[in-house]
Length: 162
Image 1 (cartoon, rainbow, N blue to C red):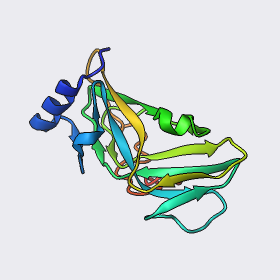
Image 2 (cartoon, rainbow, N blue to C red):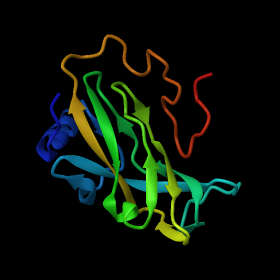
Image 3 (cartoon, one colour):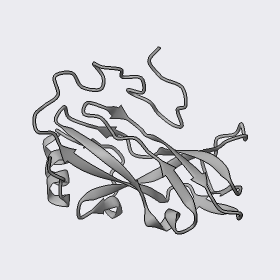
């Protein structure tokens, strides 16, 4: 396993092996890419917020979808790490790994662990995606295995694939 550098990420995108739609230069880090917020769904509120600043009540779960749509080759996966900006404000993230072969936007679960409202602007960077190479290409990638969320767009809480 090796972690891709900024140079590797740009080369992967340039060759078409790796996909990040709506790429934004500010998102590129030395060893990853910061994903931005497209939508926020606050548990208990039926309205998905798509603009402005979203107020997350204290001790409340919320879900974020990404602006960027990612496309992973069959020999690269990615870790997700909440940006320390949000950790310092009291948010805790519940993120999975992006599997080799996944394509779509991401839905990320988070929790406001404080006793105060946390304000999160739509469009802000939320988490860092750190790409890792596999020792060898997968025999069956995400789409061929479960593929439950393959192709998802927006906050997606139920599997796309039935």
